[in-house]
Amino acid sequence: DLAPPTLEGVPSLPAEPIVPPKTRGIAFPPAAAVIDPAARPIDTAREERSPSLVRAGYEEPAGSEPVRLVIKPLGDSVDRVGIGFAVEPRDSNERLVLGLTSDIVVTAYDAAVPPGRPPIAQWTISVADAAARFRPTGRDRGIAINLPWQGTSPTGDHVRLHVQATTATGHLETESLLPVQ
Image (cartoon, rainbow, N blue to C red):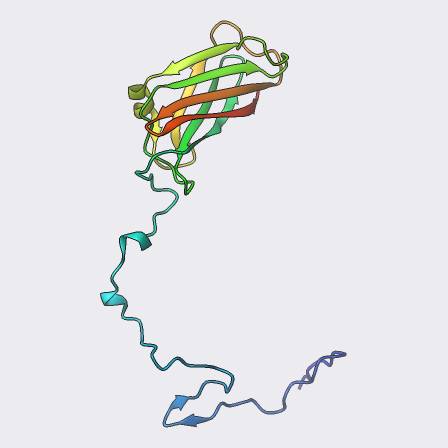
């Protein structure tokens, strides 16, 4: 027989188990509990859902208008041969939007070069090409872009990437600093 441990400042355990009172097989709630008499059990079989309450997962593309762009590196995203990244158009709830309605302009700057210098590369990706590159789910979701360098590759250890697109409601742009492998 093992005795329960005694701890300083902690009351000892009761010798007999506490059994709640029962009447006709129904246990009463503790005295401090408040039960709303108008409450009814939830009937999940007949539950009606309002369109405003329908949840959509973050993995499911949304049909709304994008309000911002996010750049994500893909694998070994930048090397001396080219650059790989994904652009995620996102709505106001941070969900991925199915696509963009304009060309995407990508400009790369060598981060080792002082600001104000010309870019080391610039690409324009057409709407049709962006739609063909769109991945709705997975780790590389978004518009997957792999581009070769145009002449010069970066000399430093980082590339500053600037991405622009236009939507029906306005102009979107973002920047990101990606490491060179």
